[in-house]
Image (cartoon, rainbow, N blue to C red):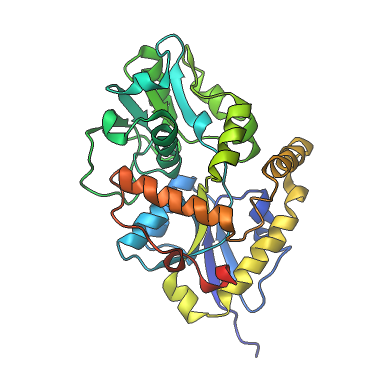
Length: 328
């Protein structure tokens, strides 16, 4: 009688880079993958922190906070969502002449602790001189693993809307001028670099609401000057799963790389062209699933931003965050 293979639960929304693994075109020798894909990204993050799934696509900022607090998670160098987050900072046209005018105003966010929000605040700090404590904060959605005490005043929508439905309230308040700006989930990858995508249209359903930063050349220059290419989601796994199956991390990394090579099978021609242009502009493939110098610099920057924002207290060694195979 054949020995039953260990079953590894994997929580993640289906997307082109993981579809070949989900569809069984890429297999993991010695293991069966049970994919769960029915939740929004935010709810997946929440459920994983609560103990569900062996393996899960996770908010990078939440992962780092969970590690600091002693949660037994470990990351693979697998980064599905990346890209600059300037375009997810929205304001109302005519009500703000310069980003510096945000000081002293109330700014909205779909979650205070969301990775996209942490990156946007970090950009405002480094490039506009706006500290997190320079503004008051309004949060429309439900937090995922966040500290009870923050260095800023945070007003919250109560009750919060379901995961994935947090943007409309923020857009309306920005349009009315109640909020000076709002930081929302942005479009990833080449859309973050070059524009387009769904988010501007969703936010623009209310009069005057548009991205505060839209200059593609400036955004590309920032990426090249800073050497940072934001990591929004990474692949995390339970430490106990990695310990129980010591050969699994290396096999997972290889499987995700193989799945990524088949991603164009699930992309439109426009998406294929967009990601090719993204690689060309960056001079490297941000989805090669390696922990290179750009990725190391990016992770350290997010750690620094979270400390400034009151979300973390310590700088974590990269060796504590990633499986040892990431450094091979």
